[in-house]
Length: 175
Image (cartoon, rainbow, N blue to C red; front, side, top):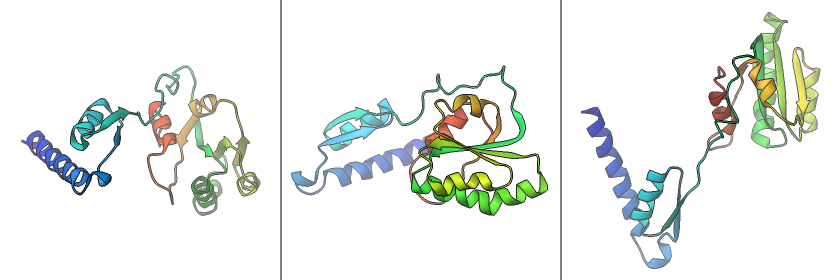
């Protein structure tokens, strides 16, 4: 019965979307639609009466896969991303100053590694904090991530799916 209720909700949502897409004059109708899966793309194309294309959102799970031959180092965490992107700067600075300081005080053997492209000075300065390491512009994150015990992903601003979340999940990292 739950599956039937779920399908009914989807039908209502898609029906509302179709009504919204197709109301008004031709200038307000969709000229194209993008789905993230083939079934979404087909539905969007039918609803909007327009061309549609699939652009998958996510990561290459063949590239980001775990390696059972690599041991995870206890009490290590990693944060990664574009370190010149304001939501990442805000997130990692908040985490280090509000959370990590308590972790490093109670566990001086813990280590936080911050990896990413184009770190701004405010991110580079985090290496001065206890038990924090900043590794700028590493050519391949995967060796570091595979040996790290957990992924750290504070999200304070921004929107959309965080690819680092999908990468960590694909590599079977605790998040």
